[in-house]
Length: 121
Image (tube, rainbow, N blue to C red):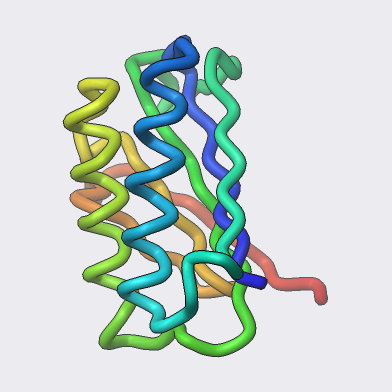
């Protein structure tokens, strides 16, 4: 079951939350080639996040999936999730970090910011 955990420091009301859940479910299913009925999306709004030392509107996500991920999929998935957050919550894609099945992918991540991720599993 592909699971996308999303966190943002922007408060999310019930209507926007529902829209994001629907859009993300459809997008993940389509892009990684899994049925929508298998996809789980968790959305956590209003979470304290400091990204690059600042508390500007930001988002972080982790996608866990058995299969369906790879180089051809990662960029498309990242830009699609970034578009959803930009449209629904006005979060600039510069401040979105998406970790996919132990693959790190950043959208417009500034070169002067460094993020280290170790896979201990």
